[in-house]
Image 1: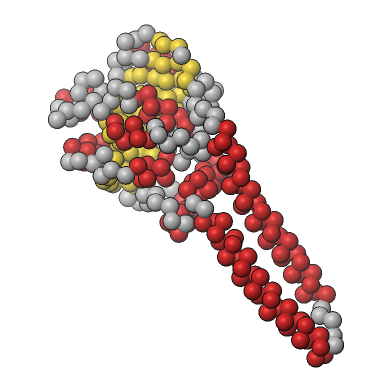
Image 2: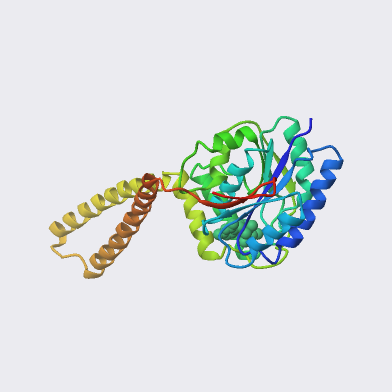
Length: 322
Ligand code: UDP
Ligand code: MG
């Protein structure tokens, strides 16, 4: 059975890679259409996430020249996850299946056929999983793998070595719409939706051109987002630490009191100062973690919109301004 496929690509300052991405995807989509894999109404949908270079102008130009190109322009930069969500929500109106991928051609577009085969076999979600991280720097590789392991330790169900290259059926995206959280971490939410899922493996390449839009600071806050939005285990760890320290303090107190009566000596100044500074630091750290959760509650309760669409380039070639 043939299905209409939309490929959703969030773009933030991607003028250097966009023409090549579009060229390769056009070829791929046309091949898949000829092979009878997907319908002729299949498209690629570029989401401009408030870029400050020529990305949106380029998308408009590509849309004029190429029937397969559609575009969504967000009102400002909202970050990768929100831009992706905006694309998925727009695409689900017309598509039977949606594949999300990055603009930089790191994800191997050749495995799209395999993804669709898995969908035809009954999977609603097909995760693109990288089979190695040889191309990553040592630092990125160890931090990323440490992150996945830590998430697992916290009891969060994330697919190991899977970024945001995945196929989703229309009904999966319909269900995704019900998750209203503002602190968005799609990799954590999508396994929660359920349905049958499958994996395809690919070798992740280096970025085709341009620079990574995830510098260390953004990467860390993204990792923190994942942890805080999906697990309350850090709070439990604090409680356990509290109990343990209270117990040790009790033993220490016994030691001090007994020592006082036996030897009559006052315990050393160094011990007291080091204990005070250790517990002072530890308590502030714990308050910090609790504060992070309160911060999340704060932003969730306001329920601000996750993205605002400024313009849509539809397939009827008329620009729609919302
Ligand atoms: N991106 C985005 N908004 C942002 C940052 C990134 O839409 O604020 C897009 C970016 O254009 C790319 C994808 O998210 O298509 C992933 O970013 P990147 O490839 O720079 O991340 P990396 O692969 O280095 O982790
Ligand atoms: Mg990338």
